[in-house]
Amino acid sequence: MGSPPWLPLIVTALLSAGGATFLGSVVKGWLTLRTGARARERETISDLGADRDRAVESERATLADARYWQRIAGKYAYQLTQAGINPDPETPEPPSERPATLPVKR
Image (tube, rainbow, N blue to C red):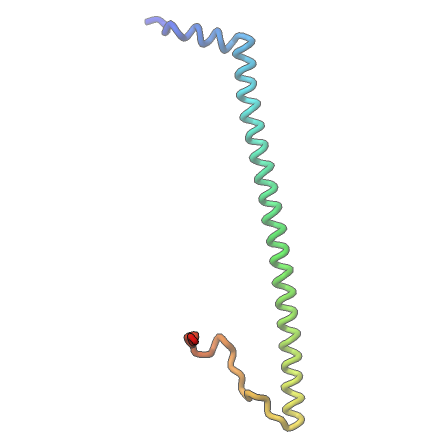
């Protein structure tokens, strides 16, 4: 049992200067492709981090505004009560506790 007749041709081609250059080019191309993919992944991760930071900052500002207006509303309700005026409505109901209503078509 001898080796297949095409095996020496392939080995000779791979070991020749052209074959080595070809293999080098294939490996170099593959490494470049991987490096480019990593760079895109890093950019994507960086973009996602920046988006997250903006969302967190926006949420903080929204919560700070909500707390501010809650304090102001509480102070006004207290002032009205001290002046003998009953706030209207006296016991407000938050939207989460109100019964669901269907929109009216006109």
